[in-house]
Image: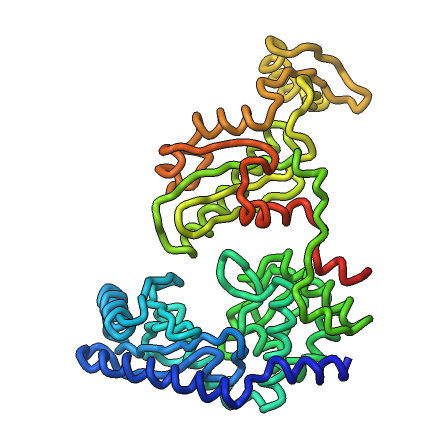
Length: 443
């Protein structure tokens, strides 16, 4: 393992030339923002944050985070309004645009570097007013706590996570953030120890120290806030992938783990893919991703209630106007009749009401060997496309999150298979009919 780590470190550590270029860009951006903040008495200062400030950035994609420090007394309305003005004015030559976390912030691109202009409140530790208030404390803590070797090991860990598709805190990904990578290396001491520890991790194991109980698959405590579980934002799927790929790398370390591993697609399952497509009015990527993930879960439940067994589901958007909801079904067509289990005959009131409610429409009814009253029912819909189309037409108010109802009212399409999908959308949908790349590492 040490040999592979040594080889990969030469690739992930930025060259002197790259470092010089990044410093020039960050200095330019910082000075542009510095010039703007002078206009606003609500602003108390400016500082670098994120991986750039901590020296854990990757040469191929390093954002520069510039944090605007607002006086604690500033109202939330002014906090948002002024920070947006500063961001847009300072970055006006670089096509700035709004991104959203808890609060909006401004993003722009200078050459190949993303610049994030983020507001935060000047507060004491633990007295957080906004989600970004912890970030400066994270930066100062990591600047002191990390050794030079740890910084490079964090770069290796980030590359490892990225290559296996589990890096990124955004809601679309729900993966491991840059800060989580730093916390893991700091806690375990090195990239090698992270791999060995994660490959043997137990359910609900706590990484860090806290007196609070958390109900996530694993628990990662924020070193500057022991009431905060960083793993709460990571999906179980991504935690599982990290554990499996760590085991595979521990057993047989190769450079392949640092290259994007393609999933193995099973084309015969395209026929069982149900697709819902709709257009939406432009909004923040974080908002639309949250909405389409929620509606996918909701419609999966409705499909199951309608008798259609959902094996996997996924949401996708181009973040401009199109959204897709994908459902891999055991079958897109199901039998016309099904068995409906009632209560045991000993339960007088329940059995009476079951018979009363179902006798009129049942095909057959009898007492089963399990002591339950059983009804043979006829389904209204046996085809998934017809079932979900009718549901969406009649149940928008109850089945669809409020924020998406107006989008669905303007129209939607429901179909099966991949014939109506573009190449990029096919690629997104193919995850559902693939064996995961992290599992293929065990071959």
